[in-house]
Length: 424
Image 1 (cartoon, one colour):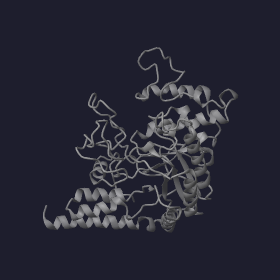
Image 2 (cartoon, rainbow, N blue to C red):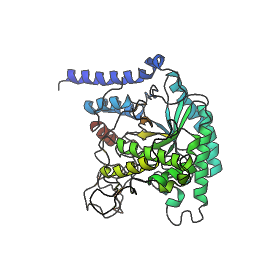
Image 3 (cartoon, rainbow, N blue to C red):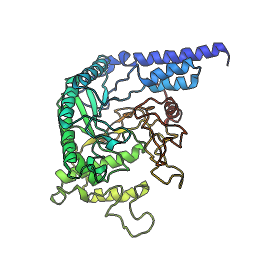
Image 4 (cartoon, helix red, strand yellow):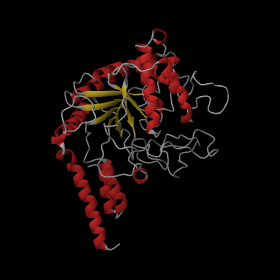
């Protein structure tokens, strides 16, 4: 390629970044004022995102194909994570973000991720020092939003990975789990105190907790105070699988709280991605529910049709789905490659961006597809159960959790499904 052509392509990438920076401002007049997510909601794009910065680095390195992809990636809205800091610090940072988004006529997506004992001391461990400190932090977070529009995802893994799930010695008395549930309920209730804040409590993903168990955890942790729950955060399971799972959870919560008398207080009776009493369960192929075989989930659908039916419109909790890395679905290592935990959720190789962020999903209970886990940020220094420090899938020590990883960002963009385009 001749130098003149290179200059033209570089100029095109930089122009695209300029268009990204102007995107929220130029469309501000077209966005109606909304107090909650509706199909017309437009989410905020940070013109100074890590993807935008990477595009400029790629241009300087002469890598114009990746630079163009990073410019396209930077044009789409992504969540902003708040993981630490004093109450004053988080209030200022949150306030700054929602103020910038409001000036652009957009709704920002924020993640509150600071609950005590988060992630069971794994790759994303940390959190506030105590429940009292966490609640002060949440109060400041809510104050930073004030009366402005915002969407908040509350504590990824917070309900799916309770302290009692961390191991037999972590919470022998159950006190830490009781405190966690109370902290989550406090966070949802406090954040929802903002008149224009939509709040979604994290609920893991379709391949984790059974439907009835997750329904009970959400009810215990105050989902009723918010707008619903969030699925697939930092994971890669297909969008339609999570939509099905979320619908079952919503129906299970309705059954356990407002449904027929025999179902009230008993979410554990709900069919799930692992079992349904509506299935023959006779050992024949396809006659029992398998989480690994969605074709068998018809038996779970059948159970809900038989036992829940069609609840009244508006009676079911809604949810959002993280589609930032699920374009090619989940990763499965070669059989027998690893004798320990292959950590399929952790920096899964060869993945791609999924459906674009939008509030116009066309799915009745799905309020939005969002890129909650920032595409291109590492999940942590994965080792696939090998006992070493190197990730055998990449041949390097992966960057710490939350660190920008250019190679991963480039891969996600190249493998995007649908193909990555500029957000107009």
